[in-house]
Image 1 (cartoon, helix red, strand yellow):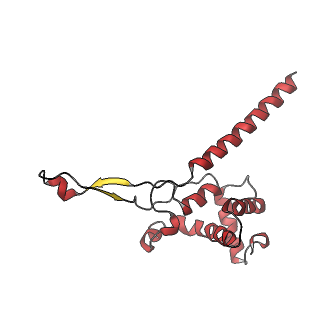
Image 2 (image 1 turned 90 degrees about the vertical axis):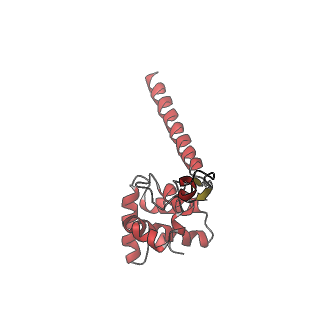
Length: 158
């Protein structure tokens, strides 16, 4: 009787984790966001209403990504409403040089796999198959960087 209860409990926990992972992926889907601001000179003169203009939030990469899917969405669509990482200017890349250079190896591999016909999710799953799902994002990025110095992992070459 107790074994059945424990088995049911673990099955329910597993299903809940799957649902949470799916919700996280859905939440990361791209949405066009703009921030409405106002012109400082128009606000200083009380004669006119402040004009609202749409502008993009400055580029700042996420501090810590939970998984590679989140990292890819940061590259393609951006997580916090700013510029996606693929559209960073030279100065934005320089301001975030450490994080950008670490992640660029991963982004280049996924981009190459997508160009060769894989979907982005399949490409990321291939990377997880090579390096393991239990490993941290940082450990996978370090291994990808070391493998690229040696010509790349054979399973990820196109």
